[in-house]
Image (cartoon, rainbow, N blue to C red):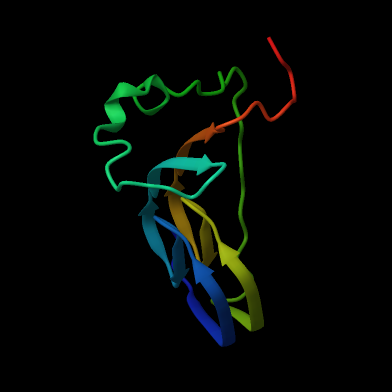
Amino acid sequence: MYSRSSLVNWIYVTSVDSSGTVQIGDSNQITPETKIYALQREQPIFNGNEVEDLSQFPIYSQPLPLPLLTENVRQTTIHEHPIIKVGSIRVTGVAASSVLHVGSTKFIRSEARVKHNREYFSDPYGDED
């Protein structure tokens, strides 16, 4: 991997979420992973131990389907300047397992698995049985 210097005059990131990455400069590998369980209730009453073990949900253990690469891809990269210059960056948020990166990297693989549960005390659609 060809290495370059990264110059950033100004960067402002409001929020970096779980397993999010802000990287200035070169890296060999970035592999952020996060597992999120989001529980929304009609009334915000929580006892603190709603989910003790995420392995009860298959979404967290199922293998990810990866794209099947059937073509040979050839890439030629020409770095005309040994310095990456960035004036300013303003980012509202770097979300779960996402990457804000100024520099070169050889390998990035990020993974976010999110399970949303919504619990209602009454039928949200107004259906009566």
